[in-house]
Length: 271
Ligand SMILES: CCCCC/C=C\C/C=C\CCCCCCCC(=O)SCCNC(=O)CCNC(=O)[C@H](O)C(C)(C)COP(=O)(O)OP(=O)(O)OC[C@H]1O[C@@H](n2cnc3c(N)ncnc32)[C@H](O)[C@@H]1OP(=O)(O)O
Ligand SMILES: CCCCCCCC/C=C\CCCCCCCC(=O)OC[C@@H](O)COP(=O)(O)O
View: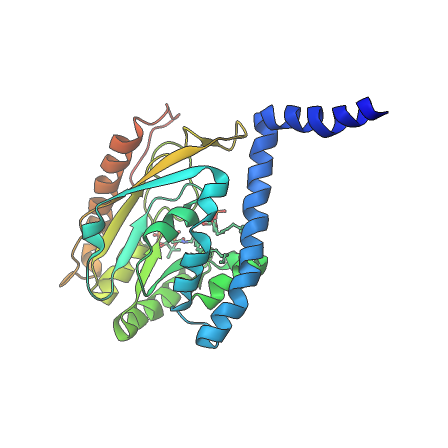
């Protein structure tokens, strides 16, 4: 009987830990569960500090989230810090590979900076509530006219309250080894707010995180903060060119940092 318990208590966990599929699901569940728990901690702190929804709550969220990388075996290396030393409002744009991007965002998140996110995120339990408390701007991606009007209001708030917003111009998560064509909302936002755009490129996760293959190993991520792109004096007519300019700069940096994309059936296209 004792021997049977020994097998159950030692051998079975040891076998499970050597299974990469088990480690993948374990780390994913841990990440979601732990973020939900951090959400429970963050909610009262945010309410006590600011009394409700306030961009200043992002400082609390940033401080609470920054240690999570250690549990998942992730390391971040950041270059180009000097490009974030910009006064006043700006729009940060970055590529979007996974919900793990939140950990990288919290490594570099400047003060008075929140995000644009899909409206469904508000229903993600305590994480959703914390996103609301942190001043995240929720958009309905299925209704462009609604999203445009929410973003126009956000542009005004950026100017009036001197805030920064982080947008994922790909509009969805993408692990294809190349950037998706950019949506235009981030660029309209920057032009409407007459605020510069600061691109940040996350290196590819494919050396340690593969969703199809169910692999989640330890790994290192490089975040490259690129020089700002000015928008002063630009108008709606310049948005398409601005979008192409940002896409080209970020794609070159992404491919340089991550190696060439794996072969795609049709190759990337711009818009
Ligand atoms: C301690 C606590 C722990 C717990 C909590 C932990 C962490 C919490 C904190 C932080 C977590 C935050 C995580 C946030 C991540 C969220 C990530 C996302 O949700 S990504 C998905 C949502 N984001 C986006 O979709 C942004 C990008 N999309 C766009 O910008 C789109 O353009 C759009 C506005 C949604 C519209 O979509 P559409 O498909 O119609 O896109 P097009 O770009 O093709 O546009 C069509 C047409 O409209 C014109 N257009 C677009 N936007 C505007 C605008 N703002 N104003 C005017 N016109 C606009 C565009 O030019 C096109 O017209 P045309 O072709 O003639 O040029
Ligand atoms: C309706 C639920 C929305 C999903 C959120 C699941 C809850 C995850 C819980 C903890 C993870 C911690 C931080 C979560 C923030 C991640 C936000 C995110 O990455 O959303 C995905 C969105 O960018 C694009 O969505 P799609 O790729 O188009 O789909």
